[in-house]
Length: 353
Image 1 (cartoon, rainbow, N blue to C red):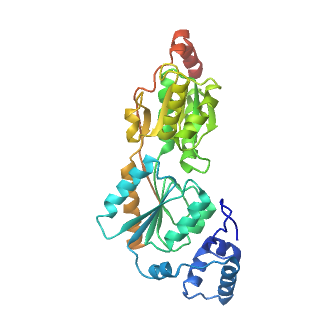
Image 2: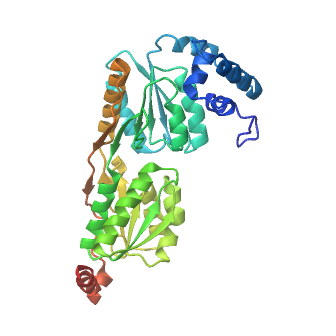
């Protein structure tokens, strides 16, 4: 048995049992829930693996799973992020209209913790919504074998029986890049999100493709998803000489703006800043933040509609994508030095050629 970050023994999961017994998650579930399994050799292997790992299913939860629990599990990476609270609001408003209730857990941006939480909720719920899951595809494949309807938001899971509802982050980021280009910026920086974030990968795709199309130089530094990440990593981009900064999300942009105030760098006079998500505070920052607006509550409502359909008829919807849109506010402007030198016009002609 492994150990967690505190040094305490790490509880074995059904995924661990499946790996040890060299069988699927669904086979482990059938054996441990005493459902018929044709191959008795598999039954022996699963029980031996469970004993060796010290795995013990929750008896109360197992009894719930044999019937209906009227609970829907929701796993989010960070409840402190307003993006997820608004997704939850849209989800909860529609769920409350029926007989189900939400069980919400926070994985703390830890993929391993996320897997543990998913397994625990699977034993207690009729269905699950994984908000921007950070776990690997291999673990998502294991989740698909838990014999419970699961919907992922902002994570493509093609080839797996998991529904997907998301926002086209690549298009939104490309809009932000084009906006900065049209303002005369030719070297921009990106404060990247968590490396385990699928949305960050999509935003990088939109960033690099749009920048390449218009001949912009891009510098990237890995930050994260919280404000302190933007505050800490912003100087990395300033040393690269960027004139515009794009942040993984608005929280990272908030941290970057705070650091720029500390360094007495004027926004947008000396540097333009763009966020992503359009959380409510974005419109009230100093200056108000240019950002990519995402239909957060609609995302939650669509996730519940997709999950409810799957629970009712067993059919897995493939993918559904919602649009994003650039909202221009006062944190972006033409860069004065570029305009004074005429470099923006020369760079524009060079890119056109």
